[in-house]
Amino acid sequence: MGIQVEFNPDLALRRFGTKGRLESECLPENLKQGKTYEFLKKGQRNYWLEGEIPLLETKGDQQLSRPLASIRILEASHFLIEEQPHTKGLYKVIEVFDPNNPDIKFESYKRVR
Image (cartoon, rainbow, N blue to C red):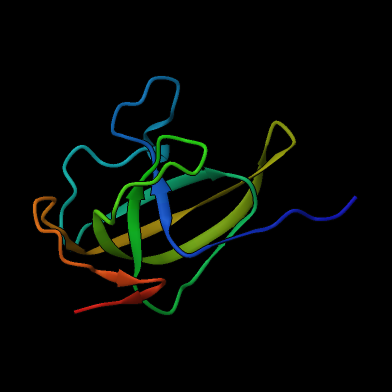
């Protein structure tokens, strides 16, 4: 038995108001540049803290959207809920992307301007 740790190059949250999910497991209803939001993910996850990463929408099973915004993870910590590891933290929205603009915003984890 080992320690399961996941390294995430992005933050993927559920659609706002997803049934059976806490608010912090979902995208905000209105994503706003400069605002800070809480997040909660199941599992022990590590995020890059020194730069911008993409914020994505997930439908589960690694079905991910294109980047919705560029964010910075401000803090992340691990804790247990019913003996299961979880990661919670805060992220700040740096820029919200226009969903109708097909321009590439990230190359892997590197922000494209």
